[in-house]
Image (tube, rainbow, N blue to C red; front, side, top):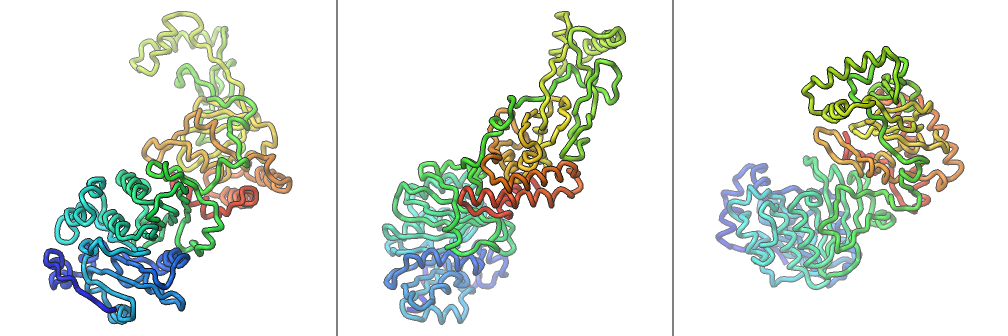
Length: 540
């Protein structure tokens, strides 16, 4: 049908007139929020619409840019009516002009925000402009114009810090016919930030989100951000939101490939408050997994607390009552440890004369110190009695340091040495080398990290009650051949250095083996790249 220009003075003054056209390309892109869609994403989005497309259907692209989307609807057999809108006249090349001269195609040179809501479409496909709220100050991209375009009732529900793309999404939905479909690609920040919750609530009030396809990185050229493709239906349903995650668009595959996967299923009623930071491509509620607290044959507990570390923990055995303990995780170089890192003066009710003489000196020093951390010890001393008594706890054959950085490692404590209170103690006598492999797999590391909490500065911590609820693969759910191979890998891992990178190949082989078992048993299709991408959410 050709090209039409809407001469709305209040808007095109600043957008399609000579002032805008004379701006440098980068500055113009910043004002207009232009980040164009890679062809691989555009083709994928078009394939979603093509599942339902009929010749008489109408499709709207509110900001065509370089015509990324409509170029995928020239296939024989697809003859929909196409209407594209573009505010930046400089993007309209002779090829785009020729494209829209074909029958049932129309290009409008104007702002989408001024396009009449009375025009309805069967489909909308779009990559809306990404203009931050602090740039919404003049011209077409003022917040006032954006709000007016969707009406005050809806605009009042959008937080002030929202980006321009939120208004584009909502206005596009208002252009849909009942049961119409919108497919849109936007940055993934809306999954996590505060204004994203309001957007989710608006989407569910106006219809239903059917599917979300999340690509963690490499989604847009020159922008180190992830992208989400939203498939929205203008019809309210109780069908859950299917959430698919991929590390990169480079391994995204076809729409058919996605349909063969098992996504995270989110009830529509939970969508607005769903924690996407906690989502996982792994189905941890599958019968393949058991809670760590159920796998340990004795209750998981913290290690031994000394009365006061400086006085009761020593590098050498200074007293006959001292026992070897594991205290410093950084001194455990390998995954299997039979070496203590300190000696603990572990006293019960009595002590030798030499030790009692030392305790008298310690008692005086503690009472004289101003350290508030020793208040409890001071109170015990003042009450009299055996203030120095330490309750030893049963050791276990696995220990785990609950402060986490890049090393989320379970240590095989083969000789069952006592460990200090900065470790959790587990007892897993069945197939310990197999469990060593499973516990140090990416599956378990992801499971631990999902339960942990950030302490700032890259440090994380997992509480004891959270640690007992960590899902871990069960040995009895795995094939006999897999268990045998895991035993050998665990034996290899036991002597590996945890810090020099030599363990990576073994852990990768453990992951590949467990992935094969997981995908077979859970009827899923998780990849090694998926595991690595999930780990990167929490650690470098």
